Image (cartoon, rainbow, N blue to C red):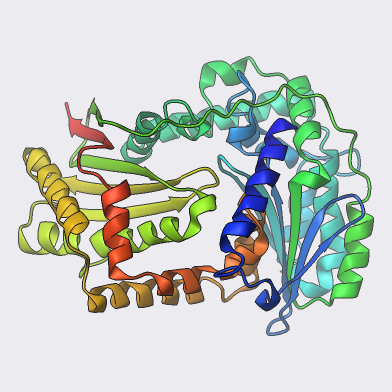
Length: 439
């Protein structure tokens, strides 16, 4: 309960910070409604095609796991589909797929979410089964042991993937205190100690209406959808007294933290660099880092790609990454290169970051990347599933109306803003570095 209170307080401060400038509640195109039990519902009728997506988001990600239950949130995502008293294992997938629909789920540090996309006419026959799974998963003992083997295999596969392995080491290097540094999949030794009873406790503690958002986007009208949701999500289980999660603030980075891994059968070396930025409470700054990520390594014309790959041929490729999370954002640069160029490439990246902190980009350069990101945003909000995911994500880490703020914030940024953000967050003297090289 303490963690949920913290999230609500963060949301109220965020409204105060953004309300006057960027948060335009009146222009939000979806209908936001809270059921009597506290469940948040977001609905938008899109009559272009006769399909509908239902996406259920839960504040029950890896950051909510109590020690030593690490990996529980992702493991539970698997076990949700193992049925209820009304649905035998595998029957839900048959119901959806026999109607030509699709279903899937994902877990992050901040959330877990589960969705179905079906023909709009099939919503009354499909949505109640999704609600049954989420609210009344039985987590059978026999299925628990079998599915744990599946999760353990996922972990083994991730350890065999150099890029996935390097990224996880980078997270652990940057986040030594915050749960964002923990592997979402968990670790084999810890998972082998978990029990179905513990998972049922975690499920009943977190899969409660105040922690969930149900998003329905597609060619379905509001009133019948509300009636359907009221029936399907009426009976939540009683809340369990689960051990609380402990989320410690991550102290600012004051040094270069470096990890070097030697891997067999590795062709190209990897240079992975990471910086921690602001979270959802400082959204304009976070989005400014998103602009900086594409300016530096977001395509062939970006600064580092042009210099390091196209002109100097020091890397086979270099890319950037930006991830907005509730408590912080993550900015990364990854280069694939010959090991002999590792030191030179890292030094050049540091020099370019120093230059960016001293000299702002030109207005024309900034406009190019603002246009690119706003176009990407437009292309990523074309389908019912894309809109449902967008609304659910922002509902979980903040509030749904912020889903529409991205273009306005990006377009509002000035060259001097990017210079200041590079100086504040992208220091060449304070970052995490992971080097993967052949043995």
